[in-house]
Length: 73
Image (cartoon, rainbow, N blue to C red):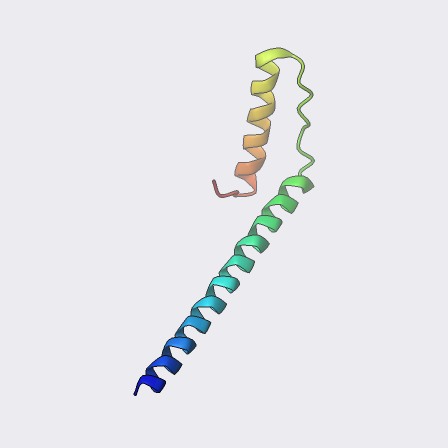
């Protein structure tokens, strides 16, 4: 019985590991798709000049793009 229990435990652990690895690949692929979509929108580059008002406008433009591509937070 102990041999069978050990075999079942090993199989369960192996499946859990495969499931975790699959999930990690899916998350990485989703992140890559979001980044590609973001870059395809030709986002504005922040130049660091223009003061707080320019920074706020840049941030608003970035947030608009992220909303349009349905980027998760």
